[in-house]
Length: 372
Ligand code: ZN
Ligand code: ZN
Image: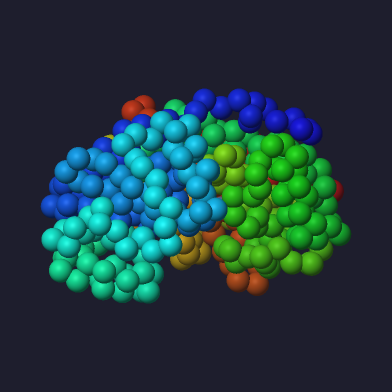
């Protein structure tokens, strides 16, 4: 153990109890007799099993499940299922998950949207008499509402990214490269107790900041650069997500206008978040604020996304989204403006939705000025 781990090792158990039953109810609503869950993140959320190969069969009628994995996990799978409180689930060690009499040929079987072409063919052949239907985002919808134990991990991941950015912030000076800052952030997050970065850390200065998903380069920062830093951590599988933008020296007129507009848009977006609100309306709020100052066209992506075991999950905060924000959703609010050849600004907070609005989890300050 090294460094400050801020309670990272002392989490309450995740308690997945009840999730198999929850899914079985949803499967019943889809009028299927069983579902085959193939997405490993969904399997982890449902059972607590965290391995690289598994299929989870869930029976609708009796809310029982069978976790099929290979012999590498013969000990780990039953142990993780027991620890997480997953009930009514047995483990089978076998190579071919479709070679099972656990579900019968007369089954109407649901497969996940993310299944590969090859796997789908295998199920179709093995269950030639069955009707196969698409489960779509059923498990992902259940995952969007976080438990207190999940929030605890996401909070810790956000606190670690805050601490990493605090430690690295003094190094953001002309002459240091994007890669050097990105590596320093990743190292610092691990030192603080994270498993690693939640996604490829973005550090983008000057013209590179005009690319929303820029990869850190060997370009050294220069005086007058806008620097976009998008950083998050993973703690016990759960992720955080935060973006700040800095100005190396007093911003010029255009940069200041971009900073002011984005801060304003982002603050209005966060203020619009509340349980029962249409996710689309939060996107519209951010978009309208930028349109009002003539920067609507420079906002080239959507406003935000859910965060949990995956960095991008439900609900979606886009102008097309039909999602309604729910209590204990964890979402980002991250408008940005990007001008090719000049630079960009993005401000992103991670928030937990509640009845009164939301709780902001990312606390690093938003003062863009780095005096030179
Ligand atoms: Zn981000
Ligand atoms: Zn994000």
